[in-house]
Length: 236
Image 1 (cartoon, one colour):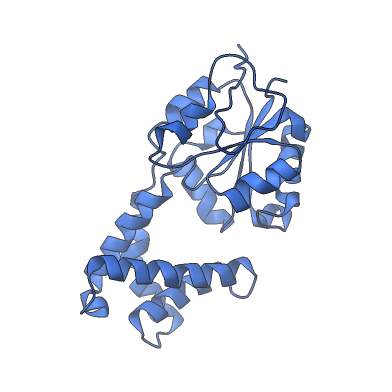
Image 2: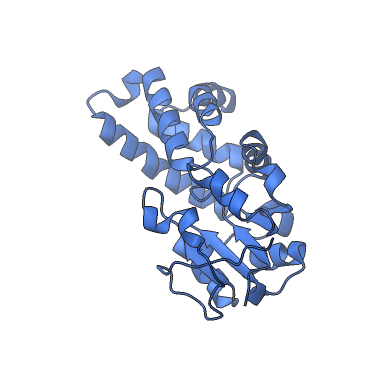
């Protein structure tokens, strides 16, 4: 069965989130040298990532807001009882570098060109305003027919309603679509459980790149394994 629609994750699938985050972290560390005195750069980066993961999980669970999780990360990393305004100011070096570093993954434009005739919906977790800003600033907006965020449907991936919302935008059934994402738990497994064919990408691995999802011929009607190279029928 040919593919009639694509469901696409955003961060580390279409957009190089990993590189943008690293650039932002280095800028933040340079602006707050005393906060990681006695640590190596690698140790400071790892500590930041662990702190960030902790508070992002709280945000996903609805315990704190998007901006509150930012402030909590800053307070924990700097070990200071900062006010909301002070935390926002301290975060500015990170945010400025992060936003200026947004870019598509290297093969994204080629992938979008080769699949131009297939309608696409982005499904992404996170703050709607920030995610839409990423999509607009990187030029992705013109390539998709819609975007689904938790604020749009009331749920986060891996909840099935996020995928149902995307299918509704495409007006397609699960078996007509392909989901492409980097996260097995949030992207691949829940989509497969709904009967959506899937391909898992991995940054830096040419065998699991966006372009690896494309080959000549039709996509198998059977659900592929997560490591399978799927082929799309490109409609002319």
